[in-house]
Length: 272
Length: 259
Image (cartoon, rainbow over all chains, first blue to last red; front, side, top):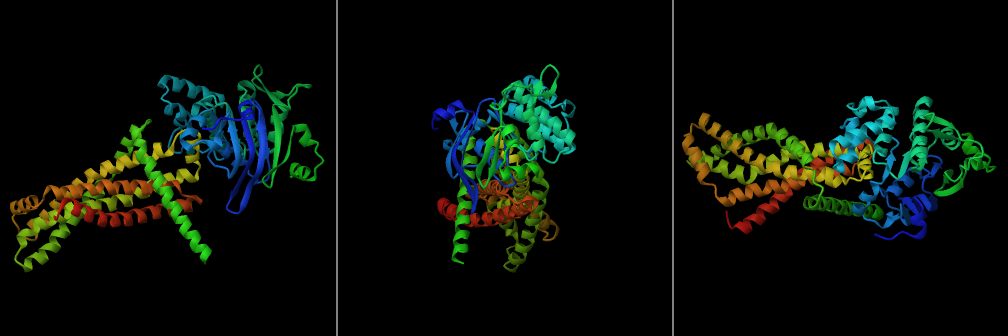
């Protein structure tokens, strides 16, 4: 296993000049970015821009053709698959289609990682209930994924991702195809995870309103709901945006910068 | 044309490499922790107990038709009393292991390919990897050990039921003495025959499980891709069983001396 570079140890995620192509199609072309501990980066871009691929590269599920990737100080690109399993246990991911194990109950899905780690049964029960309570689905313990709605499945996937208190969370379009009310509920859960547990995150989304909601709101523990970010708060270091185009970073900056950008492509993208 | 041929060869070589790598990992997993004993027992139930009806039926009818066909030829030489011997040798050395394996391949290689294929196309395999669990350890190794172990016993059962099928024909249609049938069937068998007959199912079990899992884990292209993987798994496993059977038979003949 390679040792991480200086920047790799200080950041949650570091991409250094990462390139990837599938057959003749260039997916990522010399991509470099960093994610600070406790920060959230929103990945935007048209379909096929490589957003989901970035999440898979972060987990080592896909290998780049060139470049280096550091996650929590470890060089993912230099690790073998068997070494990666240990690192992946410190991360959580919510897939776009939830990817719940369809022959297992909600309880078994959420408990999966704990069962693998041979955690005592009473401890598993307690933590599963806690995770399901976090997503407000504690009544679905014995249901199969097929018996849940799309939004509920997404929330179970979040519970499965957070049960082992990961240091980094990767969200792949967590609100895609959901109604506005359910989307808001899920975004509130993401905010809660960010503001209460200070988990670093990469968020892929096509719904700009969700991304801006994340940037302009904060979860209040006292009120147990999201509230607008108090004026004068320095929020840019915690929350920023990255727009991908043709395998490269086209824009990287804060919510205010992207909203006020004069670039024609950004303007078109925001008004789509 | 040259490009497409080159591409075809390259893809197939890559597939062989991936299959070999998966098989090696599934086997090597047996010697390190964690081991999924619960999953293995569950697979033993699905593969072993679940295959009992088809194995019993196949064995019985194969033994019966073998007795019928061989009696037809043996009668010409006045050697009808050798029916038990012929059924016994054929069932134990060849037909028992091969037909049982082909039946289990049709039932379980397809089951493995479709189950793992569905998991693959719905990102459940990726989810498992992302959750820090090795799919080759959790999904492939239990299926591999369960198939190898259960196929061994299913073959023994198939041999016995096949002999019983032959006995039924010998008694009802050929009017042979049952004592004579069973005695000749029993006495003709040597340890080398039994060894050959019980080595094959272990190897065939390896083929069924690894082929089924390989096609499942490499499925792509949605439900159509899962269907394609399932068909390919059954075809590949069946052909491989018959091909390996030839080489193993020859190898064991050389190793054990003339049978």
